[in-house]
Picture 1: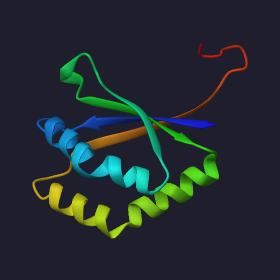
Picture 2 (picture 1 turned 90 degrees about the vertical axis):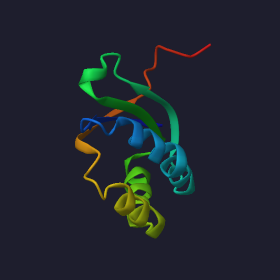
Picture 3 (picture 1 turned 180 degrees about the vertical axis):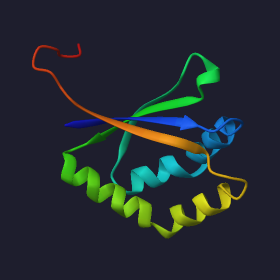
Length: 107
């Protein structure tokens, strides 16, 4: 299993509308394209304007294929276009890729 920690650096004033876009559209579209989100977090220091989430993938090839389908989905293209009419939500996005360790089992 490949885990992708995505870190969104959110533009000022856009966190709530980003939450709404995830809630109303993006989560379902991720599932449609085979991407399982395990959890969402916000930075405890609200002035940092960061949103974090983890996506599970079978491997890097599957990850790339799923995101390609997601980015080209006409529904996503329209949601993004409409939701960002007053400007983009993000000023930066990072991905950190992780794998399980051999010494830990969640009990």
